[in-house]
Amino acid sequence: MAYDPTNIFARIVRGEIPCVRVYEDADTLAFMDLMPQSEGHTLVIPKVAGENLFDTPPGSVAAAILSTQRVARAVKAAFSPPGLIVTQFNGPAAGQTVFHLHFHVIPVYSAGGLRLHAREKADAATLEAHAARIRAALEGGA
Ligand code: 5GP
Image 1 (spheres, helix red, strand yellow):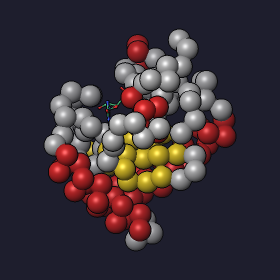
Image 2 (tube, rainbow, N blue to C red):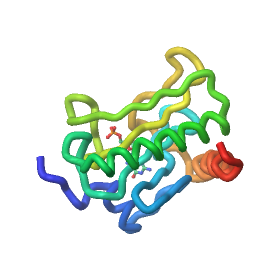
Image 3 (spheres, rainbow, N blue to C red):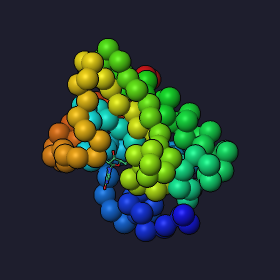
């Protein structure tokens, strides 16, 4: 499949639609998942166009993974979950629904406690409150 520059994350990178941002640098952006599977579910993306792990330039993948580690540390510090998973899907059969490379940072509070993938929108105030906690952890050096 050719990269579709109108996908939702490409539009977020271009600032055409809003997101609840927690972190940004020259190469990457991190923001709250609109339909979080748990409190603190955050997405990390490279800014460069790339549908998945296979067609994104290695330097951009590396930048996104470094930002994922940084954001995961901050999410852990902000929410103190007993567990945290990082996932990344390639292709519809694997569960990918947005075709711009992204890493999920998902705190896990109890076994089997995650909500279903991409189902239920969180309200804006909740996402903003969660993002504020993550930003504070980043600013505190997490
Ligand atoms: P995928 O299924 O491709 O791995 O994950 C896409 C993720 O993007 C899902 O977890 C879904 O909840 C999230 N998502 C879908 N549309 C939007 C949106 O417009 N804004 C944000 N912030 N997240 C979105």
